[in-house]
Amino acid sequence: MVSEEEIKDLVIARLESLPENQKISIGSKGEFNKYELIESVKKGDEIGKKIIEIELEFLRALKKGMFA
Amino acid sequence: MTLERFMKVYSNLPINLRKEVIIVIDKEPISWDVARNEIEHNTKLGKKILKKLIELKII
Amino acid sequence: MNILVTRPEHDDTTYYLSHWSKKILDFAKKKGEKIFDLNRERATKKEVTSFLSKKNPEFVIFNGHGDDDLVSGHKNETLIKAGENEGLLKNKMIYAISCKSAKKLGPESISAGAISYIGYDDDFVFIYEKNKITNPLIDDIAKIYLEPSNELIISLIKGNSTSESYKRSQDMFMTNLKKLLTSEAPSTPAVRYLWWDIKHQVLLGDKEAALS
Image 1 (tube, each protein chain N blue to C red):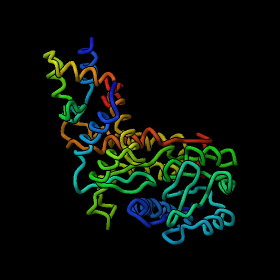
Image 2: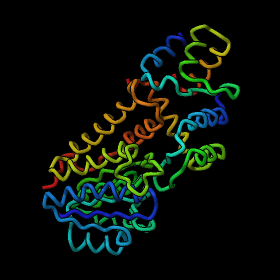
Image 3: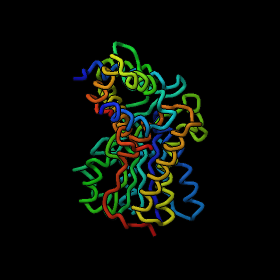
Image 4: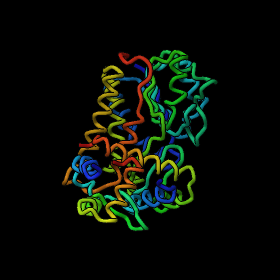
């Protein structure tokens, strides 16, 4: 069974690739740099949960071969 | 069977996504390429990776 | 045709949406369309209500933030909220880049008589470059998200149906996504957020509706 911590570790590792000079606009929730997003994922707040959801949806799309 | 399952997903991955982190095991980030090598050589790490990838429904 | 657009600019996100939307307005004006442009402090409930009631625009574009049951304007003032005033959208075609509004406001607007509602049923997400904030139109990262959004509006203004316009927007999103996945593209996290936006863009109502 994959733990919540393992999922967070994965998402955080993937967030590290976001360039320093870029920010992400997430709807009405605001704009965030990668450090803010990583912090949110660690805390498990609303933003963190959204980022996890986006990452997992993308990874599962890879499984389905959506981008081949 | 699980190697086939992994390779089916891996072979359809765009080339520039294969260096992305796909799992973190014991705090070590593992990319698709690293995962492939471990799984193909049937290492203990490879088995761990496969198990986690299946549980996460990534393969 | 008459087009009503809201363009608040009170944070980075709305500033980007506003400037990218301005490109469309320039296109529409050249085509001879009548534009009611509620920019910055004019993107208020009072102004929107007045224009919707008195000018009766056929096409309404909501830039800005939102929630699943509302779209908002300047400083996040609620403009249209499900259960309150979605009836103002009766007989109109709507495009809302306001996040999530297609989840609840969209269907309720259709029930209240809106012709069509294209929007997003979850957060609209995009990446932008911090050093381009003063000139969003030269931001090539943001472009990959906002150009497909603009394509939808351009297509509707050209008189294509909602389904055709939706398809063109989706196709452009996918084209941009696939460009980022070639062996010659630098690895970028942009792809996952593009995929998210593609999956959450929805078309509600009359799929064959078109602006005259």
